[in-house]
Image (cartoon, rainbow over all chains, first blue to last red; front, side, top):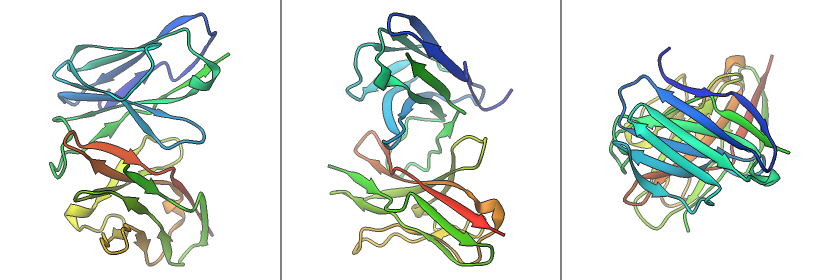
Length: 117
Length: 109
């Protein structure tokens, strides 16, 4: 499959569980991103990776732990989440790290719907 | 602080009518603005960016620095335009995208 693929598409987890979201891109891109989309908030950037190195952590609580083993894969490890963490988590990638006026295009996955009970 | 405001949560028009989705921004630097679209059951995708000054699927958007706006317009809406539309601002040296809350466009037959 081409593009940005996220699994699972839907996840229900308890507050004491540990789970992971997976993202894979088949576009040969070097930068990958995690975004969070809550019901009543705009899409928010969480983490940015460039060539497997984390370049941005947008003040995300430590109960969210990203991992980028290579430029094609990105994980979001989840542990001891709260009900307010229930949201749509979007993965994205781009050829290079997104910079102003770079002409870079970000490609999004379909998202993983997370419900914390 | 940088912000993107889309004042309308829902915009409903009839097919063939003009449509304008509003976006206002607040940014202290030189802004770079985008419109993203999400059709039903599809992923979020880039529709257009202001630096390209392009028309995509009949949509255009002009950056008005005086009014700090980047409204998305189409003269004749089509049913297939029904979707969620997000305005986004790229900010800072990292170029992180800041999104508005989105406007749901519903084009009725």
